[in-house]
Length: 380
Image (cartoon, rainbow, N blue to C red; front, side, top):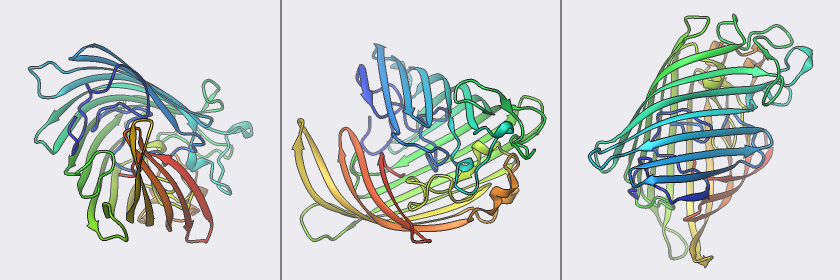
């Protein structure tokens, strides 16, 4: 594992753990895998707990099972990774399932219902194969081929699947079947010069991705999804000893063609524009999001044989779908009336250690409403 960059996928200790042990970058789909942009903005999470189990056959092979447990979303990812000594990279195959509430359909005043007034649950499943190649000490690129299936059902695990909502509006791109099947070629890269993996205070981190998908079911639908996530940390002065920094983050993306609603860009939430709930702002085929965040080191203390670093964060977020909400298919048209842009600002307390980054944040949106978030992991 390189402190400045990614983790190719063969690391981690044998046994159970919290968080994720998936390699980074990854070109595979999965409920616990980090995308290039806007992780988790399509979910209404209450607990947001992720854990894993690793079994190592030897130094070159491992089996990984990851699970995401939340009252509103359940997901499991099973993967096998091999990285022989003669290879520079790692080869991974995976299979996954996920199901839960779809945040853009749950926003108050914009609720979507299935026939018979039932709440919709998005059901997803798939699998794929990827190879992750390190090109330099700072750049890794993942190449993957994925199969995925999406549908809206009346139950989180079983239930009837529907292609329209209660008003007859299509929930699928083709509107010919309740289930959509896609085959996708993905290329995702990670460039990082961050000075620390757990608590970076300076450096650059760039994620970029391309996804070309075709419907292999009942239609000829296809789409190409391009996205990038650029973050830079500047060293800053502070009122005490310690490393203080200013984070500037830009995320952007666009989609050519017609994606299923689950693959659109969704704004709002702790990983997007804070002050809003996930999916409270519009969804679109393109988006732009900016964050400026000042991070002030408070103190370091030792607990459970581990150093914990506490810091204060002051932030401002802005996001827009660039007027593309009404270009989406498979989305009831009354959702196009959601705000197409918004901003939020606030403060938070961050606690970083080898166990991960824990963030407690309070944010106000442009309408003056306050929301408190507790999340695990970085925004970028």
